[in-house]
Every structure is written in C-alpha cells, then in structure tokens.
Image 1: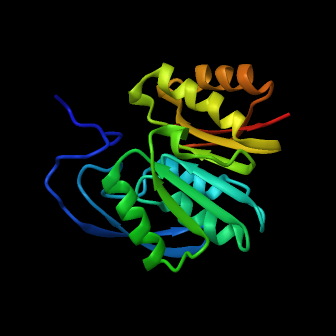
Image 2: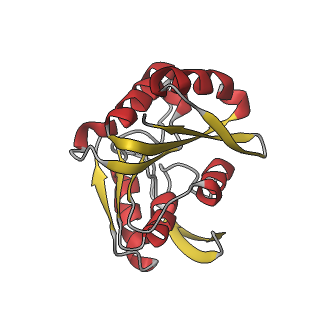
Length: 199
C-alpha cells in the first residue's frame, strides 16, 4: 500500500536534507525528510500561494496542512505582531515545521499535530491558508473548506491553491457554494490561487 504525506506516522526511512528558497524576497532554509510533502523543493503551488497571500501586520493566521512549514514561516514574518498557528496530521512534518521555525527565526508561530481542524479551538482567524491534499479525495477536501469557513472571523480570508488539472474549476465552484464568493487571484505554472471571504 502506498504511503501518503498525509499519513500520521510515516514509516519511510529518514532522509534529512536542507533546501533553500527565496520567498517574498527573503531567504529561508528548510530541513525536510522522507515521508513529507515535496521534500526536495518548495512545490510550485506552495510558492505561488506564498507570493500571493495577503497578510497584514497583526493578523491571526492558520496554515492548515503546514507540511515542513514554508507557508507558516513566511506568514509569521508578514504578520509581525500577529500570530500563526500551523497544523498537520503528519507527525514528522510537525517536528520539521517546529525545527524550521526555529532555524529561520520565526517566533510568533506554533505547530500542532492534528487531523484537519480537530486540534484547532480558535474560531477567529483573519486568514486561513490551504494547499489541500487533493489525493485524499473531494469529500475530505470539501469538508476542510467548510470547516475553514467556521474558523474565520467575519471578513476573514481563505486562500486555497490548487493545480488547474486537478480540479481547480470544481474547487472554485465548491468554495463559492460554501462561502457565497470565490475569486481567482493568481494563476501561474498550471496552478491557481483562489480567495474567498467570510461574509
């Protein structure tokens, strides 16, 4: 049976490595490992979302499915005096994200292990970021979209990045259905960033 990056406890043999990335004009160094999403590089969808997302100083941000932490690390810098909560079901990714926050000097973010929103008590986020696990199936991903709406404050923003060929149009329709609005804010390299606001 294939092991996915959204497995809670990956069994893949460790293969620690460091990758470097320039995101929002700043240099980051991330430690990655086998058994986590896109271990060899920042994947194009994550990079596009990192460059597109609008985060204001003081914002409270949730990075749902944080992996080893690139979006959360960038969000931490943009939020300034705000705070970032990062969540992933993959325990190995959670440990790496904590390590990557430390090594990149991000002090206003914390990482929790949890399956979706189960570990998230706050319901007043300004921004939720998602590069959803499309291979987990539409039912899983669409449920995450609905829960995201319930965890945003009024006027809060949801950013979702999705590969065009992996159902971007149906994702846009579902987000619009659940939020009452959806906007295609960026397209590049076969990916789209969709923005929705809680009315």
